[in-house]
Image (cartoon, rainbow, N blue to C red; front, top):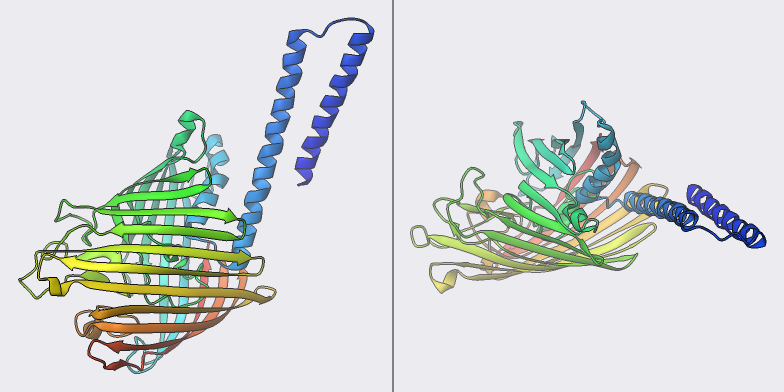
Length: 444
């Protein structure tokens, strides 16, 4: 703010000197030449541009600090901030890290202890997640981004797997003198559906658990995204099926998210998605993750060749200086080419809140639920064999209560207790899946 004030002061001096020059010229009855006028006008425009850039930088830093304080700094925000910070370095021909390569990482070390039917009945210490991110400039406004997963909660074996890997062609709208209206992403990246996946990693998630629905996925394809008249958008066309090396159906997955900030304290968005028709024998599963499992064919073996799902979701986020309240509600319709009896309609929602108490110490809570009157594979914190391949779930809810302390944007200590209750198709209760957990999350 001080630097902006200095620029305004300089602008005032220029205007004052210009006025004195006019007085002197008038006194001597010497006219102002067109060249002098254009030069002064050019200097004024340059100073005004500098003031605007300083103000944009101040607003960007303020938003980043607010996001860190609220514990809701998303991976997409971090990626955007990193691009802003490294762009000047790129022009100078250097990046922080290994030459022009930008290397970062995230992880979480945790202790889980669940009831008898939960995932950790024996009180397990775990490396909850470990990821490396590599970013490098390719050419001008083209960047390579890659995510390497050493271990994740969904696949706890210790072997390196590819997460995201894409080329970002940034700010293509500069060709018609508009910033950030159009960007292009090509490769393997997150499906732009909903918003919970943006704070799913341990360092960004204020709790240890996720919602019951937990919609997310990584898939190969192309995406355009940007912001036009304060409306953010992301539109992706992707394969849809789980295998990353082949697509077994020409029909593609399409996902669209549109967001808007009607006020500084309010963010809303709407998302729509279709998985596209997926081959039962080839694709096997959708790339979209739902209810702690993939979407799969529900038809009897040998009776169904293709299956698909269509989804809608609305998200809202109200935030203030020391916390936030956000939530989402969605609808999923499953269908296949078998009998009409296999069609399913699923409703889901969650509500999450965070409040900083003293300093960086905070309390957080999340309530979530999935409802499927005809039953649907919803694993939650139960057994995959029981609830993904076995008995469908009709109703499942989760309440997570947690406390945390954020030492810095790079270090977080947290603990939570998760209540899980539900009902299987047929009326049998789902119980003994409650879990307590503690975790230290980090990034560098």
